[in-house]
Amino acid sequence: MSTTIIPTEMTFFSRFESDILSGKKTITIRDEAESYYVPGTTVDVSTYEEGRWFCRLNILTVDPIAFNDLNEFHAQQENMTLAELKAVIHDIYPGIEKLYVVNYALVK
Ligand SMILES: CC(=O)Nc1cc[nH]c(=O)n1
Image (cartoon, rainbow, N blue to C red):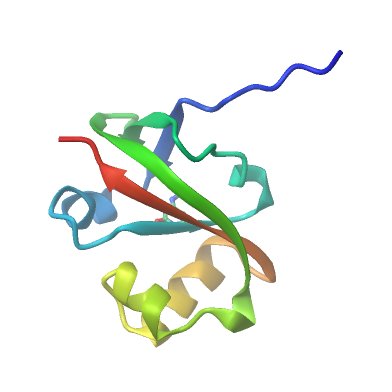
């Protein structure tokens, strides 16, 4: 028998907090290690740096995306330009091509 563990927590760099709380950032792009979020579930969100809780998010979708297929729509959903998004993702996940788009909604 296999056991499925559903994650209930997610962290973001604190620089993203205001964009998440204002609804300007509605996706996060993660690597395979963080691709296990489950649509229909809710996660508690804390800052990566301090572990300070700041909101809850409903996970809407989790879809694979190749780094080279990131586009203007992803950038818009991240509240960045596409060049900024690619630089940020390359900085966080250097050399990783296989990524996942996690689309979420703020729990109010
Ligand atoms: C902590 C952390 O990895 N945060 C990330 C990573 C990718 N995108 C994002 O919005 N936040």
